[in-house]
Length: 385
Image 1 (tube, rainbow, N blue to C red):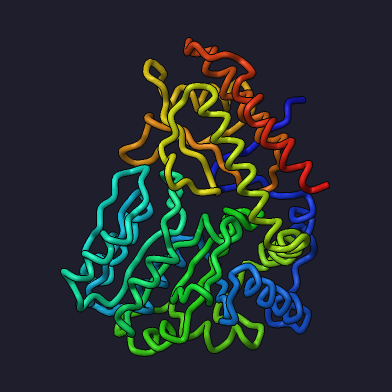
Image 2: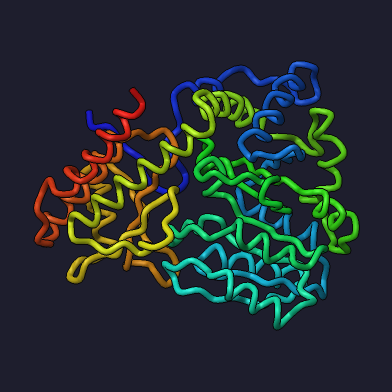
């Protein structure tokens, strides 16, 4: 039987060990058995986020964490600078509008990272802005934004926040939350965390906690004040996703097993090999200058229907890649590097792209992409000993 492979930038392939943990008998979330599980999760989440602050866990997708970040730290009438370089940057603006926050948008060409100068210029035009909202990894374009430098600019005003969508970045890139002074960082379980969708994470600096206390937005389910009070006591304000938390406990042990440096190095190697393969095939990367390690976005060559390419890879070669979103629909395809993947899964994806391009009439030289990736993987696996 053919093996199905999932190489989208979310959801991701889930390891068997995690799936088995989620299949165990449920414990009750108000019973004593739940507390040591959640205590271990809380401690290990802090290690991955590289923070001493609490990492709050919500039962939602990553967008719920984004909404919580806006609703809890800003107030109607506030002004925020928003980096818009893809679908999820646009989502920050949409959330601001929903909660009465005015957005000063810094629009960035899809495939490019925002420049620190562009952000500084926005703050010079609007010194009263209360926050900067940005993606670390813009999943829709495969771009990594210079978050460390942006945090420095945001904090040129002492009370200004930097709010970071780390949904496809935390656990993939080395992002030391406390060391870089990031005020709010959010993530979601369906990316680097080896889990299905359904959990979201939010961590808040002391500056952000003060903003939570003074925000005048109406909140209920995503009222972080409630979670701040109870999660340090190993409880949640509402019913948690118990099975997903059982899986998260296992997933965190896997992620931290060889240390964070090894975790980041693996994602980087998978990304480097994928990019090298696509370029060896004569394809153009959407984000060649500031690529994310979470996924690689590739421009569909002239004469090839991008939607047909993704469908052909799925239907004939039992492998799911992602297409483009929004204005990039049909123009790019994306290969994810997160989840239960290794170099041989990536080689399979590259081979499937090669064969699909050939099937659709593009003059590709079969084996060129896998050759380029193999050279990188030989080096990476050799360094591991």
